[in-house]
Image (cartoon, rainbow, N blue to C red):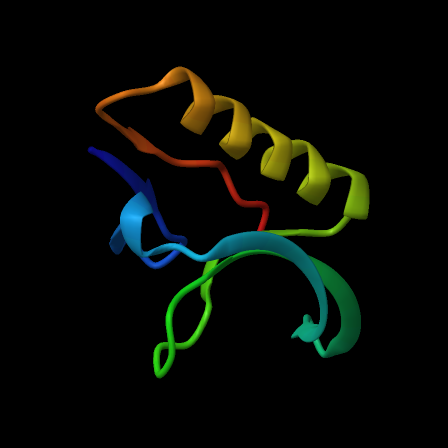
Length: 86
């Protein structure tokens, strides 16, 4: 069984994840509104999407999204986690 660890520390079973995406979000950092990029795991309704990582650059977010997919394809029984910038 494969689990994906969220930014908040929860473990999600891959069986319950519908899909992954990168979304943009405005976040306040040091009193300034900054555009950040979140790697998201979508879950079945009524659950909200889970944030896996937050990044300042869009390229970094897509790099880690690709890393998640590669790890899922390689693994049989493991916990997949990605680093987050914020």
